Length: 73
Image (cartoon, rainbow, N blue to C red):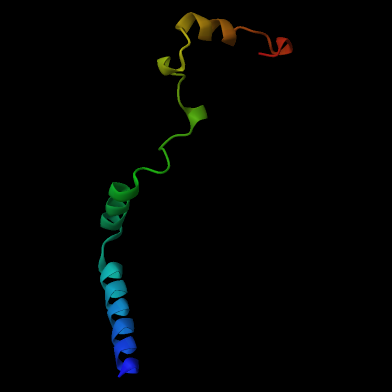
């Protein structure tokens, strides 16, 4: 009997996997994003403009951008 029960569990696992594989890719991604959040941003940090959240004023950013390379800017 124990063998019969274990084979039933394996069958139910296979059924669950079959149901998951029938889920459309967009729906799976939406479900994972809802659970785990957006893991990777759409753009990388070097692609984004410096934001005001950094605590620097516009004049500070301008001043830093004007430092010549030989001055370690």
